[in-house]
Image (cartoon, rainbow, N blue to C red; front, side, top):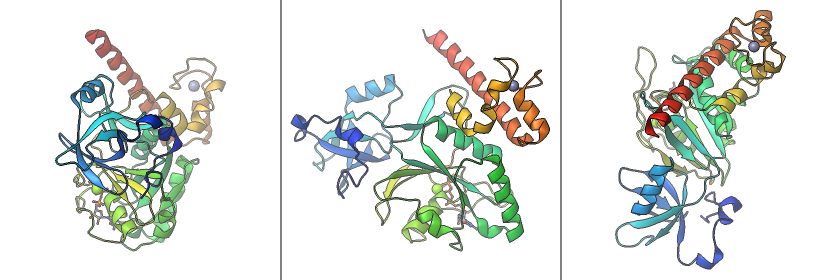
Length: 339
Ligand SMILES: Nc1nc2c(ncn2[C@@H]2O[C@H](COP(=O)(O)OP(=O)(O)OP(=O)(O)O)[C@@H](O)[C@H]2O)c(=O)[nH]1
Ligand SMILES: [Mg+2]
Ligand SMILES: [Zn+2]
């Protein structure tokens, strides 16, 4: 596989000084472990460590190596470890607020063309949660696609109803329903994974992300999966690391572990894109700084009242706005304390 087939676009090419090409091996990070990572040039994979200088720089600016990164390395396929000297500037970063009370970012994956948000149609189906994942993707300016799994567990009637619900809630996002078990809908889903394009699968634990990769590679047990909890359909966090996988057709896929907690930081634009038809009304509110909660002359509340915007969608919008505001406050406080 050439570097181009491995996702190396002109964006990265332009960062390479041709005079130094024989000094470095350009490679992509395919997995990150404690203390080392796997890097690959498209044909061979080797273990690599980072220089102390790079680690110090990374710590200073939220830039730890992440799956999908492009790096300059020496000693590629040398005796022990290759050495990573620098990271090429990223095209985009998919990130989340880290679990716990401290407010900081965790990178999920970088240099992504499409983010597939995988959500179950069965027990555990939760539209507000799905919207949360969407807003993270939108925040990163990556194209989201929703994949609804386990359609085999619903009757035709239930399926129709549920899909209609999703359609109303997120009219502008492409949505596909499928089943890993029966293969129903898989042909269309497969076609979304394009050669040379990097995509990642994200979504709650147990929704069938890893199973989907197994379906795509056509081997049931290639990657490890585990049943969900009987009582509530929740997954038990089977996948524990992120890994970049090449499908037979040359598509590049990053599997990620289901997230335990999804918070929000500076999701201003993420919320805006996710709730597009609501924020479009904002300009029509009577007050410029309308909170959209029991406010006089609020155009959004009027639309909810009139039934043109689903109430539940509106409520999730408000919840996420308030959470973002709280996170921003606490971030500001932290900065103030650390100054
Ligand atoms: N009935 C049904 N079960 C499915 C489907 N897809 C996955 N499963 C089952 O759901 C369980 C969880 O699947 P995984 O692929 O491990 O889920 P995951 O999203 O990778 O979970 P984490 O790695 O924990 O984030 C497994 O028992 C799968 O067999 C589906 O389309 N239909
Ligand atoms: Mg998994
Ligand atoms: Zn308003």
